[in-house]
View 1 (tube, rainbow, N blue to C red):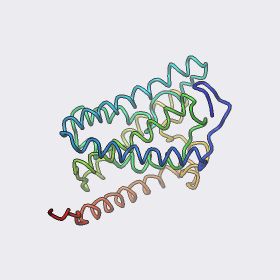
View 2 (cartoon, rainbow, N blue to C red):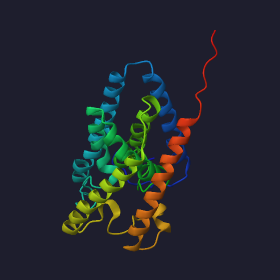
View 3 (cartoon, one colour):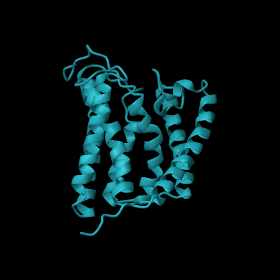
Length: 241
């Protein structure tokens, strides 16, 4: 176990720590969904907005903390990766309660952020500060993505898949330009991420970008289909007393 600034212990995927984090998050998510169920939607929105703000602050804190430890790297530590800038998007979602923005980034979170919890790229074990940030952001985003679908019954439509692909390409194009300026690899549009992740099975750049585009379209349609099937499952009604 690391101290807040410790770097002695490296994180190991599918270790006891990894499974404790996954199951701990699942218990937390179920607990907060059940807790908020008894309150008004406006109260729920405010709580979720606070969570989104906390995740955003956690993400921003990486910059001063890395400056303090002399490890800041402009090519890695600016919040331009998808998992890093999505907390700020979720702040907007819950600030104005926008179903359209939520539906656009829902697929990004389910297809991108979710896999990062199962194939994490975090370097250090808890309770090192960047490990805390990593798990807070990645797990918190999953909760913020699922909550409106579960509790508010927000729907997804085919147009949302089209919108999410268009905006993802716009974001990738903008960040590609920033990568050229910074000599960086934000959003992994210049090359695959380091370590063993889902991207490891894909061909090398730039072919993997085209393959990834097709995969994202197919997976988004699959997510939409699963979402629609779940919606059609009859809800179990409690027998009258």
